[in-house]
Amino acid sequence: MKRRSKYIFMIIIVSILFAGTNIFLFQRYIGLVEGDVEDINQLGTIRGSIQRFTKLELVNGENEFIKNRIDNILETHKKLNTPFLNETEEKWEELKSIAVKYRHTPNDYYRKILIQTSEECWDIIDNAILKNQHIAENKTAYLALPIVFLVFELIFGLVLIYIIKKYVYDNLGTFAAYDNLTKAHSRRYFIEYMNKEISRAERKNSAFSLIMFDIDRFKIINDTYGHSTGDEVLKTLINIVQKDLRKSDIISRIGGEEFTILLPDSRLREAVHTAERSRKTIEKYYFKDIGNITVSFGVTTYQEGDKVDDILKRADTALYLAKNGGRNRTETV
Image (cartoon, rainbow, N blue to C red):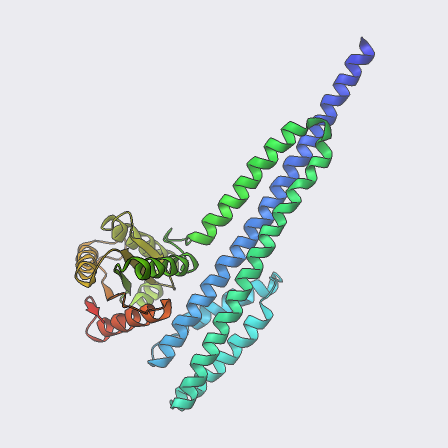
């Protein structure tokens, strides 16, 4: 009896050690995956910022803050030996060099090279994001390793693996689909959804519209009140806009302070009404520590044969018209 009790006790102790080892391993894997997700988000920030940097260069806008932000992110990840950033850093340095030349000699040749290099940066970062996502997804395969330590506790091990795998996959999906700061959808999710909406419009001959908006003179807010206050403004802004949207409308963050709203089954007039309603609400809202701010909106609608880039370009042009027209207004293209 004593010998049996001793064996049972030993089995319990070993089981506890195995379970503890599994918990430790699972937590370690989750930490690794979350680190990969953070890399993905930072790459997404670099990608959006480079796009904004190029736009401002093309209109001779002030973009020193964006340039410094990209440099800081790249420098931080260089110290952390983040994978796939060497090529990004080289292309970014090339883009900055061309931007300087374009500033000094703003001709069509340098403009074309600037846009081309910006697109190459985009492709490089997009590939880096895909590779990081692939690595993060592959790491979940190692979650099966702890089963070796739980042969006599197979059921417990399988349940635990299911729970952790579900947590990992759910979080990967959430991080990939949403912007960490504002909780708006990510640019990647927006592009995928837009493609689906285009397919639906072609198939059912339906309509949808796109709103693009950003905060007027957001750089001044960051420079005056600090980036943490600027982040709070972005989060509050999305909460305000979200309240005026339908459940089917998709709001996404596609750049630093640049957002889109995709409105299924909406024509131009309805989209303009939605944009104006949000614009007026934001204009009257008192933001903590800052006061009132304004936002400019660009609106367009799907046209037969459109691709994602076609719609984005028109919305961006409309937003540009709103900015040049005095800001705090809605324009259409």
